[in-house]
Length: 266
Image 1: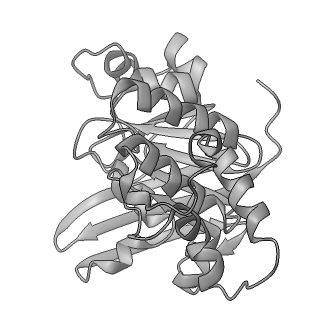
Image 2 (image 1 turned 135 degrees about the vertical axis):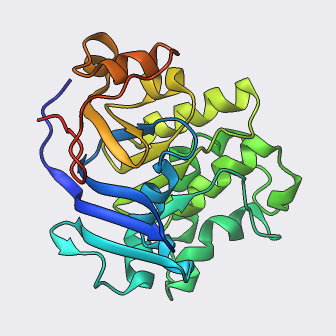
């Protein structure tokens, strides 16, 4: 694996609670620039909460309380204007959510919302759809409704829409969760095409998918980070028995972890 040039985002002692229920319990992680980081762990372990906190979608729940620190290029995300943050840290959801408009207008929606009325829209549409690995499938019907596409195609159009505004980081919450195997393969090709130009953080329940697409792997359990490191190292030589057990599909044996900070890889 090539040398990591730095971290675009980091969390420090991140705790998130909904009412009296603490979901994240002192999470500290780096997110490597230009790489794909996959977050895995059993249902309810805090994966999606962590992902949503990175562009402050957790703010949309009134009972949510966040302490600790999240940074983007060294800037404090918690004090940042959330609208500006979400332009720099985009989100692709589990269920495709194209707008009831043409494929072209879907891709350009965020660009136009930012007031970009320039002459390079055709270039943005083509470039974004190519990075989402769907250009060849839709280039002759850009004026057709995006709702006429298959679920897998809709998801890749949603990825193109996210990429069109040139975010630094793209968050993906189980983007293949509702897709068939062929569509999942094409989605994974899209993620691979984004590597280097974008930083991708993806939540997935499919450990095989995590191994195929990610450079770094984050294993969570009950609100803690149990282990973080290069994907192949975690699969081939994990430091924690719990990581080995989970990735092998067995019962998880938790390490002795102090309350608050969970173990992380160097």
